[in-house]
Amino acid sequence: MSDLISVSQAEALIAEHMPSFGSERVPLGDAVGRVLRQAVHAEHDHPPFDRVMMDGIAVHWSAALPRRLRVAGAQMAGMRMQSLTSDDACLDVTTGAMLPAGTDCVIPVEQLRRDGDSYALSDDCRPVAGQFIHRRGSDCVQGTLLLSPGMHLGPAEMALLAANGVGMVEVAAVPSVAIVSTGDELVEVDAPLGEGQIRRSNDTAVRAALRLDGFDRVALEHIVDDEAATRARIADLLERHDVLLLSGGVSMGQRDYVPAALAAAGVRKVFHRIAQKPGKPMWFGIGPRGQAVFALPGNPVSALVCATRYARPALRAAQGASVTAPEYVCLDEAVDINPTLASFVPARVQTDTQGRLTAYPVPSRTSGDFSSLPRTQGFVQLSPGQGKAPAGTVAPFYRW
Ligand code: AMP
Ligand code: MG
Image 1 (cartoon, protein in one colour):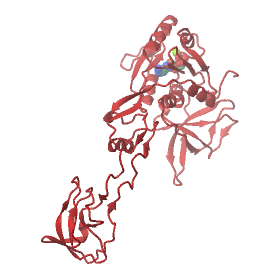
Image 2 (cartoon, helix red, strand yellow; image 1 turned 135 degrees about the vertical axis):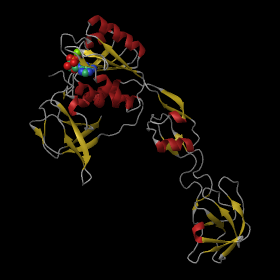
Image 3 (spheres, rainbow, N blue to C red; image 1 turned 180 degrees about the horizontal axis):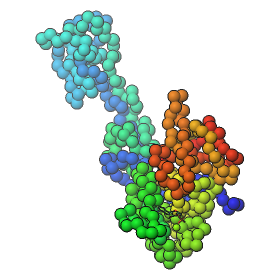
Image 4 (tube, rainbow, N blue to C red; image 1 turned 90 degrees about the vertical axis):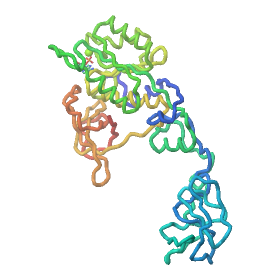
């Protein structure tokens, strides 16, 4: 057991060794979901002019404002600034228009009655100076820092890029990833299933997990259990990709050729084996060009847990994404834990009536048991300990 490192040591070692994938400039429309790699400052004051907030009229307010106002013209949204010169007149205005010169009060159309070429104020209309005017720079002034490198570009961030004239956006480059399954027993999803064979599924799970974070430059590859073939294919894949995510062939079996083949290809081992269950055999290293190599255990649940717990966040961090703290959940029932290994326990989570995120554990019977995972959202990480983690235990939760 002495060669096992802890989950947090594994995490730290991966973070320390991950390469950077650089950045690229893309058109605004392609930036959604990407990691921003530039700072964005307000191009101008927001709003850039005193902005009318209601459809109605603009007037020069005074205590003696007449109850009937002649219409002297119009200031529609998008027009250059008009002006009002008379205190017993008004200008028609629309939402989004510049506040006309000579006015300081907007009266909404709901409080007006049109009467020929003038408006009468309704009886309950009590205008005050400055009303319904969105002042220049009141949201933010020119030069304000609006977006920072590392932010995830969702709808609000995209709108800010557009509103500030950023047509080409500096975002994190997406690395080229090879997801590689290994094993003579594995066949394609659409191939006939012979005796002793099963279908490949880990690679599909891992690809799906990465896709959720926008990693879409992915090739699925397969290597048979042959020492020479494993060496040759790994060397070739290292030439063509920034990241290798292998599954299987990394344990102590007679045909587990992956660690030796990686070493032969010049991939430097950072660690092998983590004090965790499932996923203990996980291997991580760095290739000759700085390629990140994750060799995940073959058992399906182990592979998905390790991809979720280590590979996905490491790839996000390597893109410069701001680190997000894990969510914490409260265990609904006691769960068996291991005295020396961290336990990753799949769970369904739901917020209870007190607003607490509660985890309903769905322990898988074996680490090969994908069939218990549907309807789970991820897994709870429980520290090593004796017996059971009691109901009410608060622990970090990692979403698939
Ligand atoms: P290994 O680590 O290669 O000994 O594999 C451990 C177990 O996981 C074996 O039962 C394999 O058949 C299974 N396994 C390995 N790779 C895959 C895969 N890509 N899809 C489904 N099962 C797999
Ligand atoms: Mg195998």
